[in-house]
Image 1 (cartoon, helix red, strand yellow):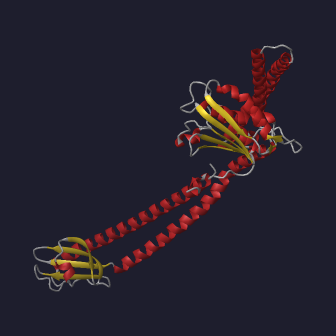
Image 2 (cartoon, rainbow, N blue to C red; image 1 turned 180 degrees about the vertical axis):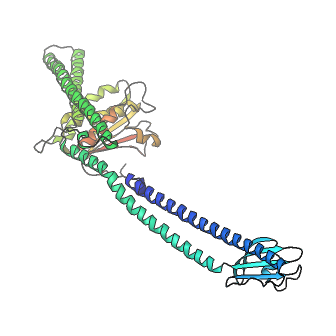
Image 3 (cartoon, one colour; image 1 turned 120 degrees about the vertical axis):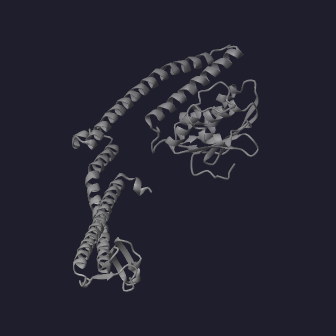
Length: 430
């Protein structure tokens, strides 16, 4: 079925189908015309011969019945047709087709009050000729079908060549990433119009990408500068002597928020530019220490809930990625667990090659699990806050760095989120 959906295959199939149908119609028309002309000719000849013979018979009662190699005549009195073969005796006046054990015939019969005249014509040989004609026409149809198929392949190749050229040039542009117009290489036909449309679309995309890059650079500069000012001012205030405990706590929250905003800005810029921000010489980051900082940063989100976060961070896992990207990815998963957990314990475990975050919340319907990474999708128990973008960002970051992320309903209840930095997750591991 996949082959028949291709445009080239459709052209070939159309040519073959058109040629075959045309050949069949021509063969059927020729055969029907031959049968009609032969039948009319024989019937008219027999009828004329019969009428002429009856006229001669009445003029000369001693007239001998007509007899030829394929024509046989019989003359009898009414109701005295014993000399006539049984296949013709009961036939009425007119011309008939008779298929008997001795062969196939056309019979012209005239039954008057004084004479019954039978004139038969053996058409068995004609039928044999017709059968040979049918065989010849079938062979002709097959030959034309094969010829149509060959012509269809040739025509499809010629018709599809400009399309293949266009596809090849598009692939070259993708490989080289060099802006180049396509319409100049093609004639002003349908393919040329398609190339012109692709040029217009590519120009719009380039303009949009350039605008986005410029916007990202501006955002990076404009956000980093005030965040740096906030961070510096906060550090200076924290170093002041005699600060009240509440003021110090609020300054710590400001510092953590500024750090979180900086990490988010950096991670989003990596996504926007599709750049990992790592090289072969990049240092590996200690996942456990980053996760410990994330837990400390997100604990204030618990508020008045009867909820605790337990971290098992004994395993040492090194991940080659910017610290901000790791922090944003883990932070979104931890924030999601806090948002959906009314009480209980959230366990954050660093394992060889992975991090696992499991809450004791209501979980999620199995039918909704495939939608959990959709933009703006929010669970039924999410409340009124959030834009539904956190998990979508997590998925895009994991795809950028080649990590694997998945969500599962835990057997003991709650939702289990896993990020595997290396290797493949065990499907049975829950």
